[in-house]
Amino acid sequence: MTLAYHLSTVLSVGLFLFYGFACLFFDGMVDEFARYGLSRYRRLTGSLEILGALGLIAGYVLPGMTLVASGGLAVLMLLGTATRIRVRDGLVQTMPAVVLLLVNAFIFLYAAGVVGPLNSASAGSRLLPFPGTPPVASAPLPVREPALP
Image (tube, rainbow, N blue to C red):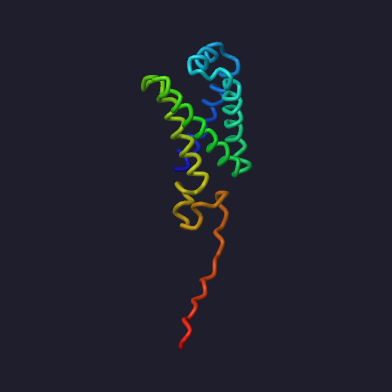
């Protein structure tokens, strides 16, 4: 599972760097965003894609960054998928956004400990903010005896 996580991260970083720079500098993306009716969001989208890719890289040093970056990229691809459906693009044109949505959802869930090696360690570690953080021990709640008449 760790190999899948690292390969997914490399794939996501590479593709988002490519698409991010394409949004910012390639004329073809100007036409695409005009077709979507979203021309004013092209630079923002490209910038967010590049920042997300850099965030995934930074996540190897700052684990919490992986959650922010992969979550943000997954949301971006959810919106991209919705846009492709809205403009009635075919399955072939929509699939890259869907695949990148699923890849980044997997990265997010792995980094959160919901899937992968942290999942088997303990149920308490599943929703911790940073992978590898030990679960906090909790004391049992006191039981209150009912008053006798």
